[in-house]
Length: 310
Image: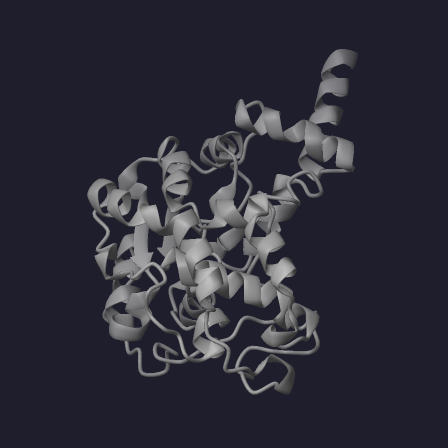
């Protein structure tokens, strides 16, 4: 073997192992251009890309009950977002090493707002991956997110969050991106074919949870003819906030997060102006029955329903 060939093989070996942040960065275009092979990587068969506060925790807990599906112990991975250059693709694939006999996937709602270049990378390394996107009335999705980040994660009641804090949060770029469903869909469908994406509605969890889950299972190609009596189909499942005051899934009665505050009219009007125009294009372009969305006109009496993710 020539010296040049040995150097090339050594470099490729280091790239495959992801030896350092520099190597982790260098490997990505090599995978995208097929210079490095993903053949030995156990990459997911599906990814749920969102939306945040739209039922992804409910979906995760129900998928964990299906014998033909494997999801890692940690729900959200963030590899394709802010950990993209912190780990190698091979290191990411190790999360799915126990799912060889199953349809395996991850649920990271933050992926919805990825830039198109990152979406292209995902398709380059996982050309057959299937996608899931759950959507929710954008006004109450937005309110739910704001309450989670400004109240629950800071162990405060909503009444303790100032008006200016809410307005600053509502005006932040990432917040607005997460409720811009049309742009999210346009970005992902500019890279992936429409038939690769399952679109579902958060509101169906309350009215027809089993039907919604069956639709997702059919999309993934796993059995729907199974006993679902042990599935938490109708449970209100809380996100896991172990890093924020010891609040865990299934514990909605923490004193510091209880409140009877509904969405104030002032914030409702602000959010309707920002996101209320999405109903028509989502219905016309994507066939979603979102005319049932009130876009902020209904009253959510309990903050539990307003900002706890099922």
